[in-house]
Length: 260
Image (cartoon, rainbow, N blue to C red; front, side):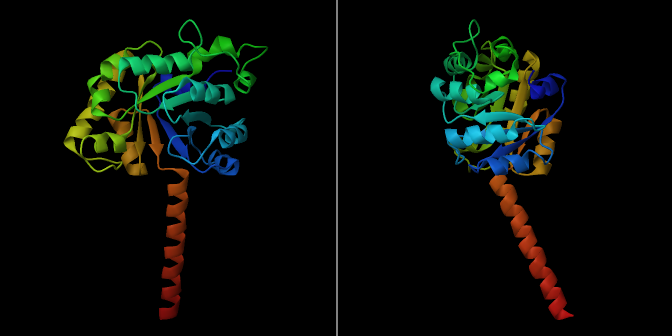
């Protein structure tokens, strides 16, 4: 078995990525049936812990989505555990230098490309007769988050690190570190220029770029710009927005009936 998302990205297609913050496998199971290409379980700012991560990966298994994980930090212990549990890719925050990128690759890939320890307790299900180790390095997405001015300054060196799959932009932290509000769907010219630089750099290297978005319209615009992994909102935001719309629509209809 190979990473279906990897194949889609290599073909130049866009991936619509969902974001899981609620530490409940049923939420992941429901999200997995709504058309996403991939779902990212968030261990950094989401409410997931390792136990809920594993339960969610089990719920996603066999569904038509590729499971990714954003780890809480660039630390080999947790990176190895999420990959052993069955993640097909790692999004890692605050990778600011080539040294950081090398540490990330080492944690994600087996020798000789990296230094990942052997023990794919669930990921081994993806292989046949202990074959997972033979396919893992070519199928695990390794995505450093570019979310500080230092990371932007070192962008090319980060991407030139063997084993790196591309870059994933974190607009909130990037803006915050530049003295701007910590928001998504940004319009500042200096931020948009960074996006263009990221896209040009990954294209030059045959890599991919992803970005966090708040709305479908802005995500589509980023896809047109050249980003291939388009994260749209989170499970919490989507649930809250749908609930708000339902409440307001019902109140509006009641008002119309009362007026009649």
